[in-house]
Image (cartoon, rainbow, N blue to C red; front, top):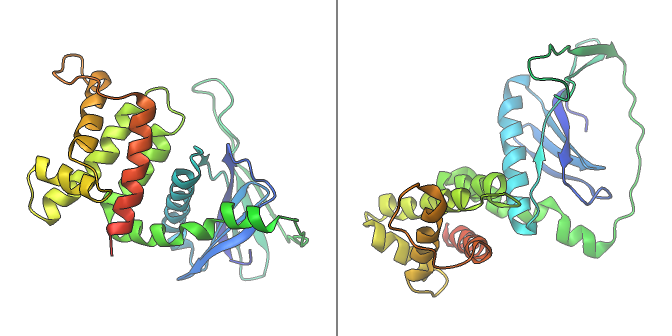
Length: 246
């Protein structure tokens, strides 16, 4: 990573520490993963927040594909000054008592990062590489419905105690897309989403009705399928929805 500005943070719950790759380098933004650390570099410091959003969306797409919930907290930033000196700012993790003051640690020095190599099997590189998620990332950047579905799925569905909340929101985002884009009513939009995988409208409606069991105190919704089946169907529908987008 040779960008003059950037941020980094550990990817929590990331099992593939051997993976080392630069998987995105466009428009002055570079993304790299090394030993479970996600590095975000930019040419212009004004683009750093945008770059972090791209990184988080990449992570959500990777998590949906791998069925592994992940998240990252960018607690380390850096910037290179005109003299070639790089300053680093590290925010300590919130491990103290609530309301306890936090102190920022800042150091300024010349940094030399040695080049290291990791041995990764070809099969593992192919299956775990973030480059596999480039196509869906580009579509998610273009279509907010897909973006929100991926984020809901990673943040509120995978390994969640109450996944039905996030499942409903992910499905709602895709159904709403068809309602707005194709000017369909809700039933027709659900049918169009189900049509993407050759299923009847009940494939979607039964899933969304099941979520009502936990989403509302009083509801006419009835459990049609298990939480596990809801999760499975949601992933299948997200994948099909992504493929359908130009």
